[in-house]
Length: 499
Image (tube, rainbow, N blue to C red):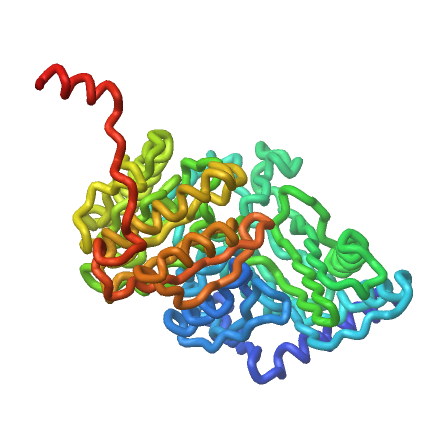
């Protein structure tokens, strides 16, 4: 009786999915294979907190979709046809991607913990899973093709005795079988030997293997009677019972997402295995900036053709690397006073160039160069830079709050010297807001603050300050008066000997 009810519920789910306007699926048989006609799905994306509008602009620009910003900060949603699914992996401002199974804007949670969790258990078999799982399968194929274009190593064919058929998506009886794409298998899947099958037995009938899965719950709000772990455990148990999948917290094939923000509930299936913010960095420093955050900062300054863009405190080179890849019509200079930082930047650039070469790219290189310098005495001509963009020391892991009181005014003054009057701009990230605001107030004749974007950086509340260079020429305002650089004693002795 329970199996009959479960199958009936799944039938209603399928019926709902196939009759919905935006998720209509048509099957056609072509050359003996089942082809799925494109349909529209809702994609969710996590983005650096504070850069939701920037990410929405990129979605509109690259995909042509209108993104809506979630009430829960750090998420956006947009609709896309499945034949354009590959485009979502070209987005640079998103950390993680997932396909939405169902979204509730005003979900009514029960008052008691037991009743609320029971509702979540009963919700799992009622959801329209089919379209989302089809997108998950398509996405595996897309990721595999992207890997091959990048020159990824394709596994060598196994000996005849080890050849096995791909695992199938195990769904309850009565539901359509969604086969795992042979080219798009998830890393967590095992071969026949690992799954306990005897590779020496040829012609053996392969039993469909249940997929491994886990449920990840993120919860925000103080009116819930349960914890995130409670919701993930009970909802995950219902998903496991419904699909007969195998729970695995580390080597999973499918990651089901349960996002709860006050009364907003979104159930989704992850399309990314790890955050995209690590895409260009292989050599990390103590305070390496996320690539997605670096991209958001670059979009704020809108590099133009032939612009000279400088990161005077490049760290591991996340900002200039992201800029050189995405805005190849500009030229990027990166520098730091720390030799280890320079080494990491050079190694990260070399990694990108090698990856391009291995992928068969004919691009001659990247419009980027690196130098070691003193931030307060940059080896550049006055008024020669169009954009300055950098992650300034917070005074936490690097430097100190005390040193920032001397560093910030000096570097703002030097930045003003090399930046073009009237047209130059700067985008500066710092968590030491008090020190920066004081230093900026002393630069009134050289810099004007355009606006500030408040972001979350590793749990720290920081600000991205967008500045405009005034038309005042350096050397004509009180703000650019500074003490002459002291000559080291060793150099003074040499000068005396020459005299």
